[in-house]
Every structure is written in C-alpha cells, then in structure tokens.
Length: 475
Image 1 (cartoon, one colour):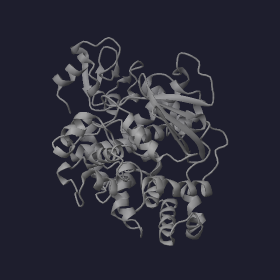
Image 2 (image 1 turned 180 degrees about the vertical axis):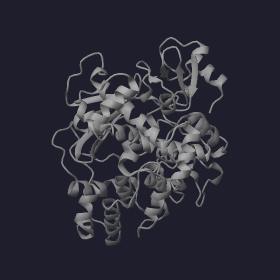
Image 3 (image 1 turned 90 degrees about the vertical axis):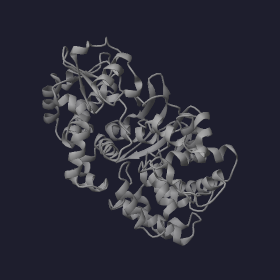
Image 4 (image 1 turned 120 degrees about the vertical axis):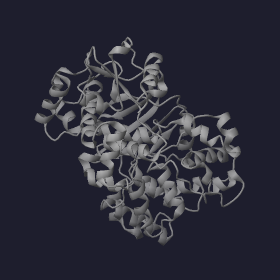
C-alpha cells in the first residue's frame, strides 16, 4: 500500500502515474474514484484510500459515474508477491474463476490456492472471490453504458449465472436495478461499438504497431501507423477488433457479435498492448546497461507487444523456428488460407480467422505438412493443436509456470519457442529468447543472456529487435 500522504498528493495533483494504484472512497458522497477523477476534488477529511476497487466496494462505496473505475489501468509491480497478485488479478478480471475455478488458476500461476488467497488479500484487501464479483459488476456497468446489448445478454456476458442473481446483486451493491443504469443518451444497436482503455502513464503506440506491422498476416490482420485491426474467433463468435489511440487513451472497437466477450477481450487487449506496465521503473532498470542506455534515452517507454491469441502465438512461433520474419509470415499465410475460417462480413482486407486448435487437431500432421513444412515440424504443430484442444496447453497471460511446463513437454518445442511464447502470450516480463538471430545481430555477439537485466529482459528483447529492424539486420 502507498502511504496516505502520497495518496493525498496524487489526489490533489490528479497524477496519472498513480491511476489504478489506489482508489479514493469519498465519505461525504459514498462513491469511490480514481485519483484522476474530473469531479471536484474531495476535502482531505472526506477521503479514504483503498488498494483495489473490490476493497472499496466491500467497504460500501459505489463506483463514480464520472471517472469510471472500470476503465482504470491495472498493476505491474516489481516485487514477486505483487507481480503474482497482479497476474492473478488480470486473469480474474478476464473471467478465469468463472471458467476454471480458483484451484486451476492457482496451478496455472504455480502456487497453491491458499497462498494465492493470502497474497491477494495482502495486496488488494480483498479475496479472489470478492475481486471476481467486483469485476463482474464493473464489466456489467461498462456494457450497460457503452453497448446496446439486452440486459439478459449483459448478465451472462459479465459472468453471472442467472438474470435473477444479476438484478439482485446490482441493486444490492449499487442501489438500482440494471434497467435504471443505462447511459443517459440512447445507444442505437449497430454493427460495432467502441470502449476506451486507460494506459498507465504516457503511452507511445508506434513501437508496438511497428512490431505488429512487420508480422501482419494478409486477410487476418491490418496494421497501419495509427491502428491495428484483425479477425478474431472467441468461443463460437467470429468477428473483428480494431485498436488505436484516441483522446482518452486506447480505443477498442469490436464487431457487435463479440460484445458478449467484452470482459476477457478488454483484459487481453490491455495485456497485448502492455497498458499496465510501470515504464518508469522498467526504463530506469534498462538504462543501467550501457548497451541499452542510449536506446532508452532516445526512445523512452517502449512496451512489449503481446498477443490476443496465445495458441496462435505458439503456432506462429513454431512456424518461425530457424527462419526469418518474412519466411515465417509466408508459411503462416499458407496455413491460414488452408485452414482458417472465412469472415463473411468485415472491413475491407479482413477476410479470414487464424485456424483454431480444433481445426488443426482434426487436420492431422500430414495435411498440415502439405503447406510446405518438414514432417517433424508439422507433427509439432499437430501436437500443439491436440494439447490446446484438450485443454492441456495453458497459454493465457499470467499462466507463466504452467504454460512454460506445457510447452516444454511437447516434442519439437525448444528453448527459443518457449521464451518467445512466454514473452508475447504468457506475459512473462523476464522472457528472453537469447538464441534469436535478430537479438544476436543487434548485440553483435552470441551467448548473451542479459541476466543483469532481470526481471525485465522481455523489454530489453523488444528494444534489441527494434534496433535490428531499424539497422536492416537479419530478423
């Protein structure tokens, strides 16, 4: 927890660096706010401070309608317990408890459920169950305010098992049923809707877009210097998303059929675009290395480009083994053309989804090899697909321990692949594929593991890849 004086100072200055690190319970109004709330700053005697939205709600405060706590950035602290708690928090926000339960979540994170409960209570002042409940309620508020979905659909999309439970919980916690909590202006039901996502601190999207643009798959992805769009299959829904900067931060636009999946999609986009990173701490650590100091000074705030689909990242990593970025993209295009589902209605240039695990598992190694792959590599792809289809390949953000172990158990998946997937899909800030040819070329020497830059070697890797691309070195 931050001390009270620091919280008061951040509140008085409306300091964006502290947005999402704590919440202000206003005793005179009964609401809780972000420190950047545009409303009149409450008097010091009326302020209480809480480490999480769940803790504030457990104390009886309601979320502010102006600063919208559901839009606040998450946490990415440095010390191990806090990092564990932050990873768990992100997974819970994405609906992990509803999907697989606390025991499975703890196993994915490499700890016991008892230890996870203890860490979450110490870090956020609330249990995993309380955090999940608050996450469901805040997701429902966002859907009520920013979409035209029927209330029944919102209830289930937010993670509630019944409409009756949804109505009762909203009325108990927020003092009004969902029907009275719609936005003030009528929202027409259309083909898309847009939500805003607040980053932590200053945010530069250009380096992430540069990385994604060099690897964009025709038909699946479109990436310009201003935004990124792609076809995305989520559950049974096949739609598309677009991400770019707006006046209030990152703007996420979705096809309406993905609206029921807004809660996990928001969590995934936050991770994929690294919105919650503590870049001041990361850059200060990297700048201690003479090799990277000039890069940091010249271009501060370079974040890690993650992935919206962990299985896709694993498949593309295997396709990229021992070939250049351009060579991997060619092979992946063939895979998509042969096995990807067709998007019937979407923006120009977006026509196909990346093949899902079930489709590749059904295809078999021989059919996969027909795209021009060696037999052994096709077999590795098939094993990955089988493991994912059977629920044995946890490659969601935060499942660092379980994801690494599952990848290592698959023949044909080596250290480079594990590190690359850990960096982009699992959200491991210390992942570093040391044998990557672009990293070797950027450093000018082999065998360098950059151990002195732990626990932020993933950020070093991104900077070195960026250096290699700018210098035209082999990538």
